[in-house]
Length: 207
Image 1 (tube, helix red, strand yellow):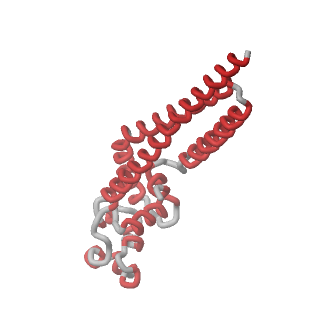
Image 2 (tube, helix red, strand yellow):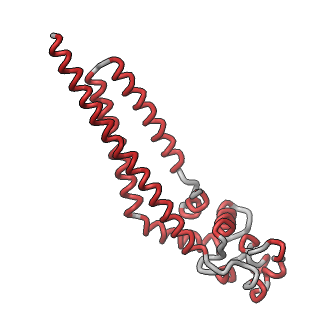
Image 3 (cartoon, one colour):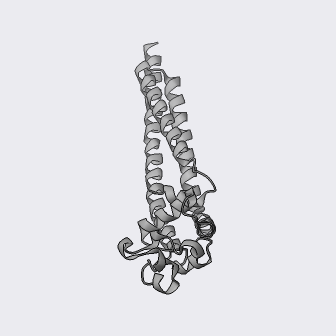
């Protein structure tokens, strides 16, 4: 859901999905390694598994804290990049399509409001983009070229405030899930260490 907004925030396609996929794959592999270590009953393998979990825990913790700390910088970056996307809008490139997606999804228009489009390169040619229209059936290109008529046909609220509040609310959910998963791995680390000690103690008793 955050894809269009991330595209506007970053200068290119986001690498976050690849990072998350790689992290997920690493967690699956480490989990399989933990199962193998338990079946084999090797203390050193369980201790290595606990080290893997601790590294993942620290990585997730740092990522969650960084996202929370730098959320205001994300808002500032979005304001600059979204304003540039509106000024350079042509209706065809990825940035323009992202702007359209944001305006349709959040029922907003422009940066602060629909007047943001008046200074864009697109307005003298085609007017305000159709993605701003409240009703497509009652929103012609002639209406969108006329600043007075367009005011009655398009959404009044700007997108910047809506998008930043949407991102912040979703970032809170993402951060909460991240912290929840991260701290649940502490249980895995504790169990791996306890099992390692238990196996080691039994081996000594057998000797």
